[in-house]
Amino acid sequence: MSEEQKVWSGTPSQVINFSTFIICGLFFWMVFPLFIMLWKWLEVKGTKYELTNERLTTRSGVLSKQTDELELYRVKDYKIEHPFLLRIFSLGNIRLETSDRSSPVIMIKAIPDAEELGQKVRRYVEERRDSKRVREVDYE
Image (cartoon, rainbow, N blue to C red):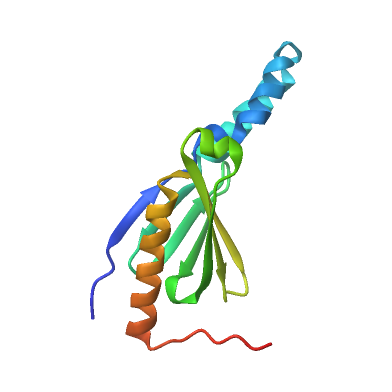
């Protein structure tokens, strides 16, 4: 049996807070928006993604931390999204649809080289399915 190996790790870009930063920046003189900006910055800064050849781990939180692990063989489908603002900065989102009941949809937000990471996810999903002899079946 092969050992679990880290393939990729990253964090979302602060670009996802762009509109919040603009609006709060306009009202900075009220002081309260500065706290909103700080909180939003900390939320993004506190989010970490780690992809191994077996699972995707998402760690998030500012004061309390939450860890969500997704076994890759549970991924049913993936979609790469490039909203306009993210395209300007060469970033993208990866949306994973899974058979996991607690997390049916996982978003990896605002990362560079989303297409490359999407291909890695696809390759490791297939490898995990083959090693576990698991197949995804849809009933309609």
